[in-house]
Every structure is written in structure tokens, then in C-alpha cells.
Length: 192
Image 1 (tube, rainbow, N blue to C red):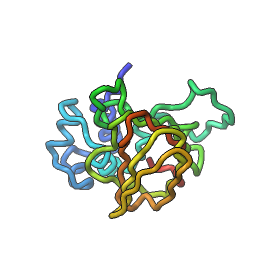
Image 2: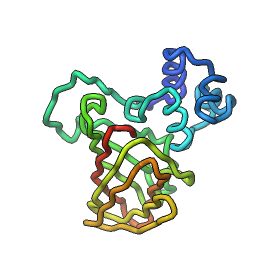
Image 3: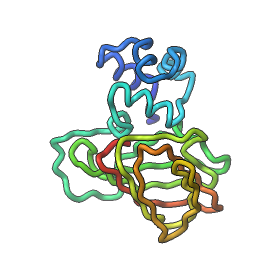
Image 4: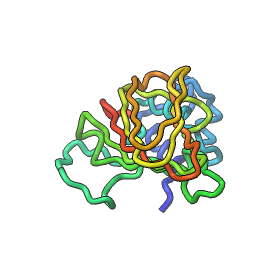
């Protein structure tokens, strides 16, 4: 079943007793964009969605998944990881069935660390616009290659290479290789 971003956005906005206009003002986007998203006429970029959710405030993992703080589970089978990224958020690579997959270990609201299993199809990226979130993040490339831009610096990283940075610095991930890129990453506090 496909995640309905528009319905979820409207439900969150109305639960917080915000008008479209007020949410747009707080997030720095247009009222028309909020309306377009809620009607599923527009898929927001990661940066736009993050700005809108920051104005609520809500993390991407809270928006897309469960954040049950009472969850005390320790071990997870591969099938129990929570997908945070429906295909509509990141643009698809022309030859890929799914561009980016972000699978979270457990419920973000139950921990001070957010752990992700990330997959980027060849040519996939997090969008042309750099995005930010309020945490620190680090990761190790397991396979493939990723081009990571953080602020004014851009580096191509391969298997065994790693990164760590303040996520408040605008950043972007892009698979520049011919094969899928797999990354294991962590974010603290959970904000993505």
C-alpha cells in the first residue's frame, strides 16, 4: 500500500490546529505548495518537506512511521525495519524501481539515536536542493559509491569510506556510480 503524503500532511496539520496559510508562513513555503501537497498534486522535495515538518515540529521518521516511545524491542529481523522514504519523496532513477530507501531500526521516539539502512539506486539522489536537520550524522559506505555534499565541500565515497558532520549544515547525497550504494548511518538526536 502506497503512503499517502497528502492525507498524512493534512491530518498532521489539522491535528496541530494549523491552517494551510499559517503552516506555509511558519515553514517559509507558499500556501499553494501546502495545498498542492495535501491534494497529492505535488510531491515535495526533501528540503521542502523538512522545512514544513520543522514548522510543526515533526521529524521525517515521525511523519512516515511509528515513533512509539514505549517500544522496548531490542532485536529486529530485516523485515521489521521501518521504511521512512516512500518513492515520491526522492526522484526515481530512470532504470530503478525505487530510487532511495531509508529503513530505520526501531521507533525514533524511543531512542536518542536513529539508525538507518540506506540504499541509493544508480543515479538517485536526495534532490537538487540541499537540506538540513537538527542533529549530527555519520555513516559508513558498505557498497557502491555516493557523492556527499556538505556545505561547500563535495566528496565521492566508496566501500569502507565514512563521514560525520553537523546536519544543520546543508547537505545532499547522490549515487554517482553504476551500482546501488548501501550505507549504514546514524543520527543523534533522531531528526530525520
